[in-house]
Amino acid sequence: MEDKSKLESIISELSTKHSDFSQDLTTYLEGFLHAKQLTYWDYINTDALLNLQIQRTEYPDEMVFITYHQINELIFKMILWEIDQVATSKEISTNFFIQKIMRVSRYFDMLSNSFEIMSKGMSPEQYNKFRLALSPASGFQSFQYRLIEFASTELINLIDIRFRKTIDRNTSFEHAFNHLYWQAAGKDHKTGKKSRLLINFEKKYKERFITFMKVYNTKNLWSIFKGLDLADQKNSELINVMRHLDYTVNITWVMAHYKAAKYYIESSIGDSKSTGGSDWQKYMHPKYQKRIFFPELWSEDEIKNWGKNV
Image 1 (cartoon, rainbow, N blue to C red):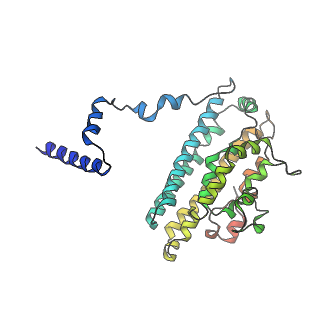
Image 2: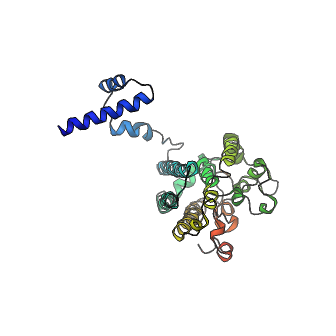
């Protein structure tokens, strides 16, 4: 009797739900008679997922490189999913904010800790051969990672440190885009001419970047934090989780990537150039650009020494 009562209750709720959308419950339920039973592999799309790793060379360790970067992009998607929930929420409580920041931090902690898969998982000899077939592609061109940056902090904190004093909120988004810190890595430092790496990247994503920059100009994580009550902005737990996220993204994870690149690119077999041709050392190392999402949460001394002791 209890099971029957529960079933009747569920059917009643379904009827109400579908009548609200002018849908016929009978048709909906009859559809279940014809539907296949769901399986794990269909739900996850396992076959499609496992057929996305397409090598450009015959070196076995290229599979490690491709798969690892695809995993990174999936994690980036999850991070953006969490940030979007904060950005689109009508009311932000301190606990909700802390929860989301901690989730994003855990994703980046995992990314940081996983870099040994790259640094110890490939033969330098193989890497320095198959990477030549990847030019001018580069991890620099991760569209989602750029979105994470735009969604995390005010735009001024992503501007090349040489130009920050000349850019403010009255500056056009187009001008700001052309002076982002990573633009320098895609240009010849003598002539200012854009590399094929940067040209391809902008051709594919520039319009989407600028649209995203406009949307998140007032609802990035830092802007939302500044919109909290002053008492909430002083919440020590919130401050600590934001500092942890900032340090993890802009020092720990970056340096894990930097050290792996340094190991392979500067090995005795290879040379010091990246596949995209960028000045990767000055672009990646945090001590040069001082990429900091939440600078007001750090002391002057901490900012001055950002990335120097790693």
